[in-house]
Length: 307
Image (cartoon, rainbow, N blue to C red; front, side, top):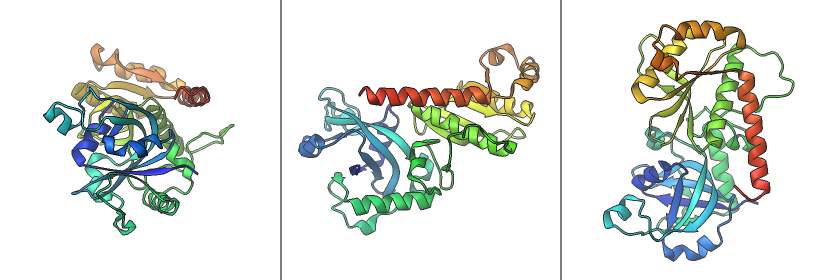
């Protein structure tokens, strides 16, 4: 059975940790025994102290190391010294968007833990209960969903089945659209981005969200913005991408069927060359193929002990 750890930290420390290109956490030297027993692949529950007061995410423990020379968290930067030198990387599986922490955090006050201990091994029954609460909160039934889809999730947004069956049966466009959203979000997570589906934007008349975004920081702006257009409403999709490009310099990406590429190029031709040259076009089949190849690469990296 996988070990499960509860990591308790201040809100500002979690913001800093999750805003790293690859999120990480640190422990004081007094936790040397726990650090020594920490295994890669162990489960990590992310708990934010008051005013949040609950679990906001789930991650896997990755590379652990000691760093006595690089201040990172706010208190370390203010004091000019390392306070938490025992560090490890976190592969974030699921985490609430920052603005949803207080509203949707998972309350575990009934666990009656010793809350002054900021890093502690959970018993198997408490870990199982937390998994059950996560399943009920986010609406999945199988544990495999933890490793699929977006990393930034809200209640009800976790997909149940994200891997496309082979051969794929005919599906309504809306289902295929959602499946592509989930696969794109999963690819972003595999590339160490915070990925999010239906990212809200303030664009009147052109739709109020981007299909998928990849972000470097949990509370940051989109580095990549994706629109998936299978029905032919390409003009509005392009407007959403242009909004993201003009506001945040996001890299625009369009997923459209091959028979609509010419229509897309016509729409882009009137948007200005600076934006149009940044747009990259791909098909759904290419997205599925990319996910398959990334999965094979990740499996090989794990087999060789390189991830």
